[in-house]
Image (cartoon, rainbow, N blue to C red; front, side, top):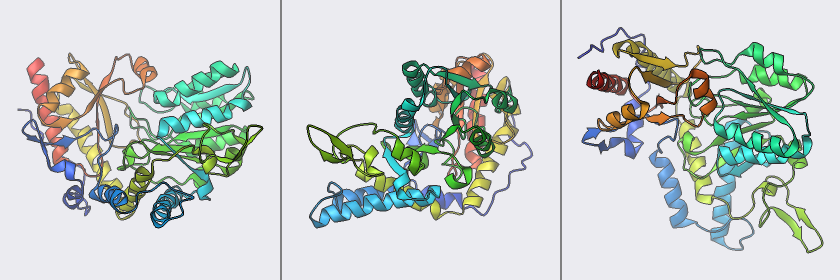
Amino acid sequence: MTDLSVASTAKRTTFDVDAIRRDFPILSQQVNGKPLVYLDNGASAQKPEAVLDAMDRYYREMHSNVHRGAHTLGDRATSAFEGARETVRNFLNAESTREIIWTRGTTEAINLVANGLAPRLKAGDEILVSHMEHHANIVPWQMIAERTGAKVVPVQVTPEGELDLESFTSLLNEKTRVLAITHVSNVLGTVNPVAALIEQAKAHGIITLVDGAQAVPHYQPDVQALGCDFYVFSSHKLFGPTGIGVLYGKAQLLEEMPPYQGGGEMIERVSFERTTWNTLPYKFEAGTPAIAEAVGLGAAIDYLNGLDRSAMEAAETGLLERANQLVETVPGMEIIGTAKNKVPVISFKIAGLHPSDIGTLLDQQGIAIRTGHHCAMPLMDFYGVPGTARASFAFYNTLDEVDTLFTALQKVQRLFA
């Protein structure tokens, strides 16, 4: 067997990963007779017991529809629901809870903004995205462009997987109306310099949206410091439940945008002659919301707030360093995306192996990764591959699990060799 004892520069910090792992019940199980090594965090992260308990407590002790309930359970549910909104506001450092809109996730949040900005767009206008975007930050803009006559223009990336800043600057012009950019690439792990990009865009009067789905599990963003007009993310990647996400938007822009959906809650007054809209944030929250899921997201953020974030980031850096050191132990393995500033994500290919075969054989050894195009087909086309295998790490993963992954990859490579 190929030796894994490569000299490591990764330090085992005082971050107590064993204690952290005990907070996540799912991590203690076995899969296919092997201890679970969960490395699919970029698709969806696992949930700490604090989140599970908060949602269970909501359903057992306070379930009711929120707002306008003239009874105690309604008051409890509303308090928990709006308390979670305040938790998100604080997490993002938004100015007001009026700027925090509940959505079903990042995808719905981007669709909401795209449709809301459509009245501002006309034929010839340009919407700037990057070549590394998730489909959720491409397709909604294409749909709006088709309706309005606008054009979606991609910013190029370098072979290393970094945004081509010269390309970005050259594409800014008087026709550019919107910049929609990912904070962190779900495929490459690249951390984009969004603050600098936003500053350039603002100098041209361009509206900016940041897709933070892959960033928030690793960093706590400050939307006021970034200066973005919109910031979106999903709960399930932030160790919270599925089915809920967040749209942060500057209040002035949200006030000017039309509602995305019609129905209950988002109205002020309804008559057959005319309907008027509710105030922010409820103007964009038609129907009964995902109450328990909002409570769960609030609990996830509270859990993260209880951790040493700098130590957490250091631990994740150690995981990525160890993975990069071990690439040389697997013949024919190539990392796709070698940006200098990355979160702990490695997308890779192994000569002669199909990504789906890699994923299947790793699963037989208890290791969960993701394979395919990762909802980023334009990026796959750029690299000339149909897809990749992707291992994405979280703070509850260990250096031993990194070693286990590469031992398994050696077995897979030998099997096909």
